[in-house]
Length: 115
Image (cartoon, rainbow, N blue to C red):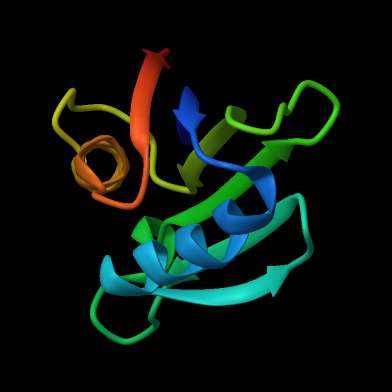
């Protein structure tokens, strides 16, 4: 299973972050499956790629450390594909979503840590 994780520290109040992240994921051609104030689950839209390569995205918003101006958020992207190649489908989509978050005009990126 391919799995990629990234953590972000963003300059944005927590109450504004969740709806903006939902919009960003939809702009990345991902379908929202489930969301709460601190969790979002999205996936690629079925039909354009085989089931084993279909990527799921989990967004975790850390309410416990949020301040009035900064919020920590993590994304986990995974699929059932074995990551036999460094540049696999899940990795490409991870890099695209990560770059979209880093470049988003709705907040200021303070820190980004990928693993």
